[in-house]
Image (cartoon, rainbow, N blue to C red):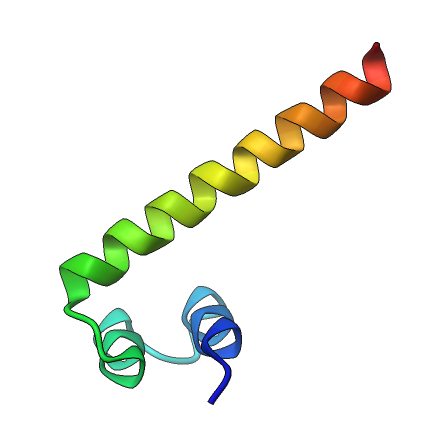
Length: 55
């Protein structure tokens, strides 16, 4: 199963964080860290694209 789809299902509330972690083969705390890192990367990319547009 595509890991991105599993994470998207969690974000949409279709599955719990425990189910998501189990499918991905991770501990819930590892998954939480992964999701935080993903969000930080996304926020950084958004800020960079806004900076380029406004420059």
